[in-house]
Each structure stands twice: as C-alpha cells, then as structure tokens.
Amino acid sequence: MAFTPPAPGSTVVSNTRFTLRTSSDSGRLAVQRIRLHEAELDDALEAARSFMRVTGTTAASWWLSEHSTPADVEALLLERGLFIVEGDYLIDGLLLTSPPPPAPSEIDVHVVRDAEEFVAVVGAQDDAFGTPDSERPDSAALVDQYVLERGSDAVALFGAWIDGRVAGGARALFSPRGVFMAGGSTVPWARGRGVYRALVRARWDAAVSRGTPALAVQAGAMSAPILPRLGFEKVCSFRRLKDVLDTA
Image (cartoon, rainbow, N blue to C red; front, side, top):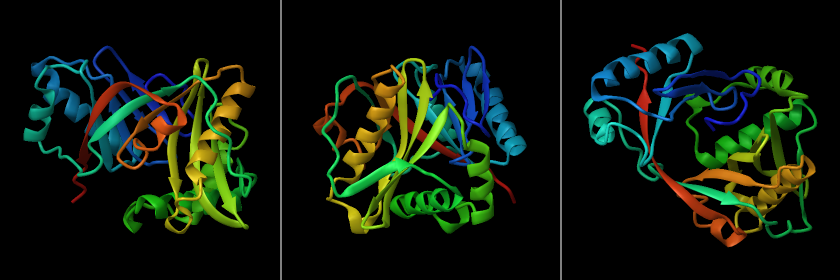
C-alpha cells in the first residue's frame, strides 16, 4: 500500500524513515517502510500518534518486514505499548501475474453502483471480519465516503451477490504497475461457494482492462490459505503490530 496512489479521503505522509497512511474505508493508520535508528523510535511513535489525532483515527498497524530497522524494532515497539493481535500478526505478501480461475456463474460481482450498494457491501465486510460496533462507521458516514470515492480512478469497491443477497466485498487500489487488493471478505452464510474467488477474478479483470495485469495483496490468516490455490506466489512476509490511541 505504501506505493499505491492515495485514494480520495486518504492522507499520506512519507519520508526516508517511514510512510504514514490513513484510508477513508478503514479509519485506521498504516505505518510502513519503517527505516529507523533506535534513537528515532520514540519520535516516530509520537509522530504516528499525532498523525492519528489530526486525522481522527484511533488504531494503527505497524507493518514490519525483514527490511525494517532497527533489527529489534518489534521488541522495542512491544515495550512501548504496541501489541500483537492473535490471528492478525503474520502477513504474507503475495503476487499474481497470470489469470486466476473464473468466478462461479451464480455469483454476481460488480463495482458498487450507488450509495445503497456501497453501504450494504461495507456492512457485509464488517460482518465478515467481525468488526466491533464501536469501529463501524454509520450509514451517513458511508454515504459521504461513497460520494467522495465515486468516479475515482484510484480505488473501487466491488460487491458480490448470490440470489440478490450481499455475500461479500473487496477493494481494488489501482497503480501503474497493477492492482493492490484489500478487504476481500465473505459473509459466514456464503462461505465455501466461491465468493472470494469471484472477487479476486473481478479485480484481475479490472487490472487487465487497465493494461496492468498483476495483483498484489497482504494476506492474513483468513486469505493466505486460499490465494496460493488461485495462483498467487509469496514474495515477502510482514509482522503486524497494533497501536490504539488512548482517548481517555
């Protein structure tokens, strides 16, 4: 995500030490490309938390890789109050450069067409991920987000329907080199029917139509077992730590 163009409503600050990015769809901060000296760590942490206060976000993900510095940055961040979320810690960076399997014929996948579909699909994503009510935007905020993103060339929200019911959703972030996938999810009642596969194929088709036939994704515990079966290859690994802003 550090290398994708910012979508409407997102805010990005980048320097040689790190990239800070908020997105309108998640309401969270991503801290990426972490290249720090140990003496800079406290200043960087305060910079990220100040960024959260300014942008109105309350949670942040620090994305660590084999390139992050200092070498013991994870231990140092854990000492400073960041924590590991079980099941959302080890993340695979995956890449696809050949066509994935086609979608099942009974699944309708398309970019959301209006605010009503946008609200329904985001709600389905929150249901699929078990997002706490306290972290879910209300319908009015989602309508504002739809208006902001409508017609954007940088991002699109795809929805999947089975027999007229919303079965899942996923985002595509467009770049000159391919499509970054995010938020792919299937509601519990529709799992095992190929919804996730259909959402991947739809984004592949979108990438091909733009002349950038490649998909990249940061895959957690839910999607990492599925994607290799669709042709994705692992190219890197991440460890994600969470920071929650104290608003008391």
